[in-house]
Length: 265
Image (cartoon, rainbow, N blue to C red; front, top):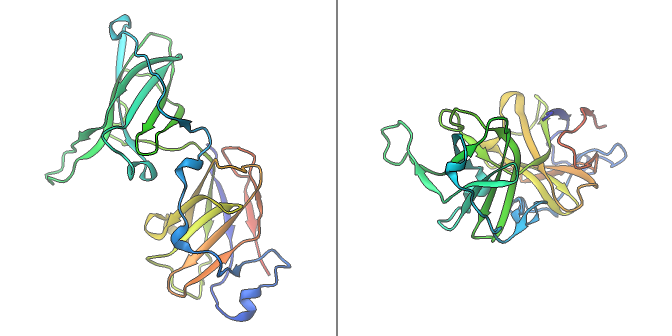
């Protein structure tokens, strides 16, 4: 995936002049109509989600010469909705090689609460086979999400020494930098989100943001209307102000955004 850096320059003044910012240059303006508490990724809107659970038919493990183990954790958005009824399947060459329910994973910490639920898949394979597709069924939403060709079969275990996350397939990633001389405090409670129309297609709160040089990394996910223009909203908790760009990025279901440097009058 190609990660593009997009630098957005704006101020946090709450004066009337700054609120207008004239819209002539497509700049930022305060937007009192958007409630930051509603900035959430709607999981049911993710493109490619399948209604219900597929009729998975598992192959005979002993028909294959080799096998590997994959330990898969759910991303933050999905993990908040995990239940005992969830299932994950590993598919190679169109065949379902394993299905499993969530199980506890214990790390080497002495902390008794250090366990996390994960999916442990034992995946048989033949020499010459490659990509593994994962399908995750979320019982709470009765939806199945697909992660295609994320890793190859291997004799080693995937996800034991470095966590492997099942996440939605992003359509774009951007790094958005606040100016270093920002006149208001950036801190807990702040949020940055991307929207396509009225649909939130990505959100990053302050405590999950990449902090170096006040840069926020935003992942935009496939949503209805992905061929439309996306815009960014930034919420500053200290002032209560919400700043919004005019639409400026055309999304064409690509996995990258071309580099942009946007300056506003």
